[in-house]
Length: 230
Image (cartoon, rainbow, N blue to C red; front, side, top):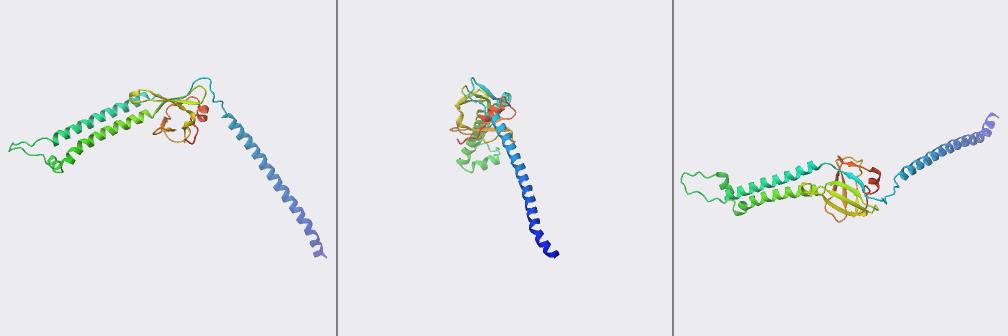
């Protein structure tokens, strides 16, 4: 008799257990749904902050760097290096093409004779290599200064961007380009010392030194700071 009662009670216990489990799961689902709604509402509010009107009525300064002295020193360094390698090339050219002295007591310089023994290719190649080294250094420094951004301005209307770079010996070079041709793959809050800007149709990236100042961060992020397919 006792066993029969247990069998009769089991279905009721199953129903009660199932109902309680269902109620618990239903409450958990509602709580998660409420949290998700709150997250979406918060996410929407954060996104709405960046929905700025980029159709600016006048030119707006986005970024400016005051490292004029640093880039001027880079230009001076490149000129000094070019002069140094030019002097080395001229000295090698004079030394290697010097006619031997007929004086019996003359003691020839051993390393010069070894270089001369390699033929005219080595004799001419060393001065040319020195000239190439000086030219390469001055070219690298020139490109680096010309691609270092001094000022970034969002032009009136918000559809164009004016990039002013330092140039050689701080001779400012200003380029105005459509905004959709600019792409920034790295955000301003990322690690690193510079922010690269890729411009469609231009060789090399423009770089913004993080020691400079971004005057309008939100407008910068929504215009020049966006990553585009260019």
